[in-house]
Image (cartoon, rainbow, N blue to C red; front, side):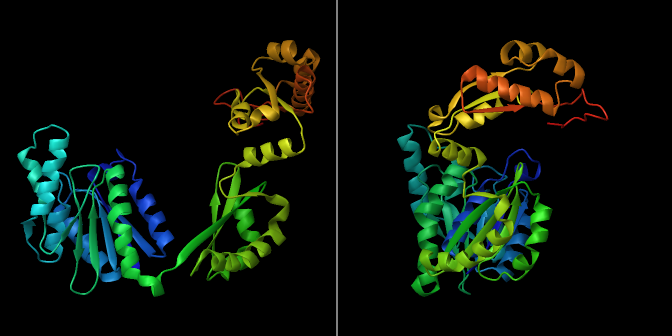
Length: 373
């Protein structure tokens, strides 16, 4: 099954609202084994929405539209879908009753324009919305394809997707066409995305199933290996040889799997080796301590930290020799080493970790540019 997403709302095009719905929908479709090739955004314009729907109908089996189901005049998704397939809008008594019940539960009076939300393209089926007034709509077409319309409010969209749409997709796929999508993420530190790509370019070029996708992060690169198979164990069997090939080449830069960032892996090593750490920070202003103490169990390895922004603090708290500061300046290897040693002695820990540098935006020079750490 091939799906296509259309996100409706002028606010998305203006950048006033961040589109999180398409990311959620894409993830859920991938988990179901549904292929997704196109995601579009369009403003609240009836003609342009209808054009996109027609275009998507040519290349997808399932069209999911988010947004434009509200009670106001600029909510035009159902009208546009009706235009695309030459249908009329008809009042759905079941949808109207649910909207009225929603207002009764809230002890509020329903506005006349909320009645607009109960009109569906002819042949459409209302999908219950437990979180709001806008029912979703399922429109099955004569050629076996389908259009699903969902509200743009994320909590409402997710509720209808989980309760109604996913069971519908699973039923349409049937057991013989269902496939699990399973991904394994490898995390690397010390090489940039382009360098990693160059090292494993031939492996990526030869991909079929599983596929390999690199993602650059803040100071690291992730490789996602994704397999489509009948079940998870079969997917893992496909992933294993690809993972082994990647690690054969990138092993020295590999540090972990999945969602576990560098601080989580560092914490696990500290705990397993029963080592303690003290942190002395200048330019990062406590950020490293924050990351280390965000990990559950941090009391087992993190003892104390100091933010010594000024030279005077480096000397008074950490015992950094003022002559080092005068000779080399605060942003140098010698001072970083002295800060780490001073922090370790101050806290009585196994490890002292220190950082100093020029965060900017000013204060840099040719010898010590902004960004030097």
